[in-house]
Image (tube, rainbow, N blue to C red; front, side):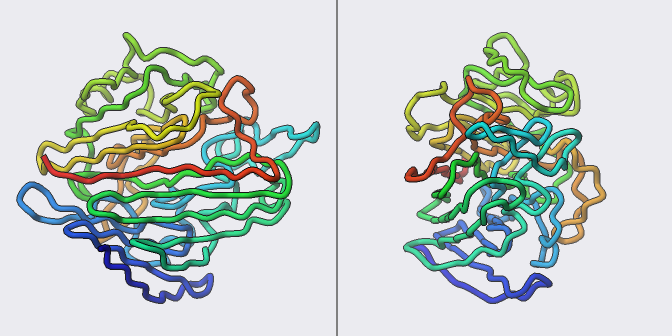
Length: 342
């Protein structure tokens, strides 16, 4: 059985809660502010535990959280081109907060909300209601995210319903470093992503519309790749790309999508999901100015994200998987993070 505990934490945005989940040698801390995963502690091959996600020591650090450490982002994760989309012949305009585009739900997205909480078996369920017009999106949207820790697997279950058709794309934006948060880089991590294709992007990080095979490209991560050497070869600042896990129209069956190994500690992270894509991001925009846990200065390439989600800008690219949730439908997806040691 998983030990589940709750403690109250005050913040400038009112009361917040921190939930602690413990199962064997793995422990996870969840905040009601932003539905944040604040910490994940796992053992290495010698039994020494370390926190393997970036973030802040206290709740106050998450009040702005410009890099979305550990947060659930929404109503639509990732980028929407030019902050515009059309639903039912009506154009909607969003805040522009990432170059010329809209990113991660807007100026005050789900990462800035204080979610309500309730205990469930082996975890905690967090809920949030986003009103019609919130950040420019149509419809009243009721959302829940359930975190469950069972043995060495953290499951994240997403549900949502709406009373008007709206785009939706929820993900968790945890930044991992399997050597332990605060370690300077991830160059010694080995990454595998089980994707046959990826989405090339333009200079504003919007997919061009092409679905490109990874075969004979630097995006072929189907066999383990040492990140340091691959990042040196890759043009641009690093990975910030969607890897396609299934084709549009295919049923959302859960499948393993990624495996990351840190040989030095023996820590292994495996990810499975029902989502059609995973955004692999190598923290290209961290620059050392953000001070995190223990005063650590988080620099470029000091962590990686595996954001399981729909393909970016899918609401504007009709040959991508459907991004719309309609009245009477239920948005439901599951992602699992499994932690082990070599």
